[in-house]
Length: 397
Image (cartoon, rainbow, N blue to C red):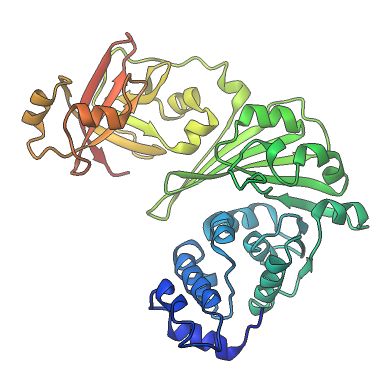
């Protein structure tokens, strides 16, 4: 990688231009690799949203698109750093672009960054210098070999296994990721007091806990109600109790919903179900749904569940601090396009279905509605197993 101040200035001066157009102008700018220039401009634009602080560093170099897509966002990387890195000696054994390493280094005593891809390693090493992070030691190595041969013992090992197979297809099961954490967990826990594993949002939590055996804590992280990652914190001892589950959602208004519950206790809870749909309907955020906090949500907010398999709730009084969306019920509707048109004359509404025989797209098509507007149609199954749809408006919370 031939980075220079002259190249940097050239890239900055062309940031507003179309990257593809620049690639086609290779003859006009023979001094520079225009594919690399385009890669930097695309990376910078991505970083303005995903990595806003790092995008302010003009010496920051961006890798190819796939690596940019796979890296943690600044929001999730900073969360992990603040939660787990303070004062610790850490090994990031799946270094990649090094975003998690960068933010952990701001809080940790030291971070060992391990990445076997030479290009990524060189880019990350350059970026560590550009960001003046002197407490990072970079190693271009296979992470498992590195751990086998090092004499170091870490407070925390962080692993974000690659979730693509040899054909580039996405995978989520731990045994299909690289490195294989399940095969190497004894080694990992012999080299650190704690192991933090980042996994796909699609991973089955119950299965993963059973496979890993050492899980003491599960953290589900979402940004603007989109599940981004599931974190498993493991220790050397085999857990004989159900790990606590933390549900974290960073909201668009800057606030954070944080709820902690025990998945084993969740199964023993007894909750009320509503015979009727009351004035408000509640839709939990994705972290509560992914974590399976269905009964916990009812008890925590003192609201009634609508049906055992309908993960919506209702109450007569508005619960201001609910961790999810709140809808005010306007009326129950007859599920026919002709009747719907009377209540939604502009033909626009957002459609949601929960435990309903149609998907939201299918119901929207049946009712001849277009996406948009201020109203919501919610299709659901009630306690008596009857299907119903409701016209609602969203309430800010």
